[in-house]
Length: 364
Length: 266
Image: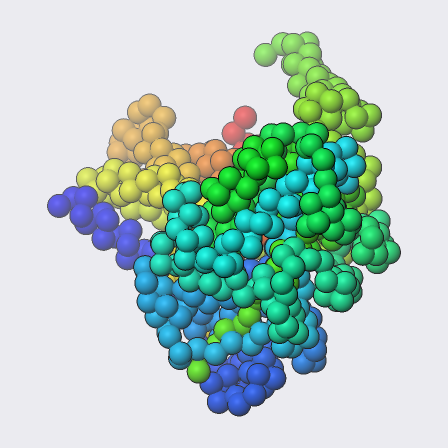
């Protein structure tokens, strides 16, 4: 009884404080209601402008935001966005009306009703970065320049087997999903299957919607667009890094020769047999090619033993590769660009995703 | 206390830490520290480079410092007031006091990383403006974390009175109210500073960590995370040093206020 009264007293005290805050906040709640509502907007442009004016465009930030900044600039809006958490609760509760989503991950959770999903189905629409002309390339394969120079055959063998894995995964997405799920999945098997089918589209279609049949190809035009947008929208406080960024060319960030030799089978015995690859995120079908290559024995065929290291949270894949903790890594091209601007010496050796997987999702 | 020893200890407490600090900075700048910690000048940039970035971006850094300090101070003030209020209740109604204090202390055991996302979600309806609701959420996190230290310490200050002072007040036929204002309240003053010594650094940590999760993007903590993730370690270090300076500066201010406030007691 005694404790109960005390508990109640404390809860009451906290309630007083929180209502005091609520009061001071709600007085301003109508100040931004003047701009047009996103649900009444008819074109994507109107939707972007409406959401930007209301300050309700969401992105995760932390190096994932550049395409959104480019899009906001394209429509003459201020480059401000809300920090979106890694779930879609902000979109669900309406505090973010135009939320960032990867087609293969968050969009599936918004649309589908399996475990962890929000079940919106066809009640949501998307704005595609590729269609808007602000696409930046994402998941690639990279290592340090030093590693590539010292172990050219290892690099080529790794690319060759990995791309074979990607090819098989894209031809058999359901089997790939099962392989990833069994390899230690972070999400449900239904979501993995959805992810495999969506990732396939990103790997086999370019930014203009044309089919790509060479896995891991570095498309010159898309790479250049990525670099150009990166120069415009990556802002670095370190002036020496910022000026290095402005002077970067494609040759500073990628080398196509390893991939060309790998695809034509033009490589010898690997210098280093035991290698590791750092993923950008948790084990999921975003990286199915590597899991398939390992499960199907493609790495063994070229004489490699591969350790797949999953990422997630605040693990920086560029740092892990740069300091030699792992040999290869998967990152977004924009992240590799900012890492090299800051002084790292990383080299892209294959471009797995041929188009941007980032979309903005809104409720219809 | 003999004066000689006093000078000696004072010199020791200043000189040795200063020498140690200088040694660390020199070995850092010369690269010896990198060898010792088996790291490179990339992850741990040289002090000169960090200072250069701080100098270049002083305006932007000040903007973020203001945001973080505002959160830390508001939360500290609110948390300390509530904490003290709880201590008063516990003193006036001693029968119910201990239970309440236990619960408040339990709040302190919740990690900030767990608390922050909960408060961010909880305060979503507070305002349409992301800047306002993020601010409220961050302040609430600091409030909760600084509440416990104050309530527990203030309770001790209000109840652990000098021997027989309580009896003395009774012989003066002082009422409960007089006793509270003349004896208990002044007696709790040193304990308030004991609490603040814990909660001032805590409030800075609370503010920085809650910025990680806030919807509205601003603050020293957010800049640290942002720059580490895009592999800009030198810039991240500039903000880490800034965070250290905020913490130390607030602690120094507290020490000065404490010296002035408790001057007559020594």
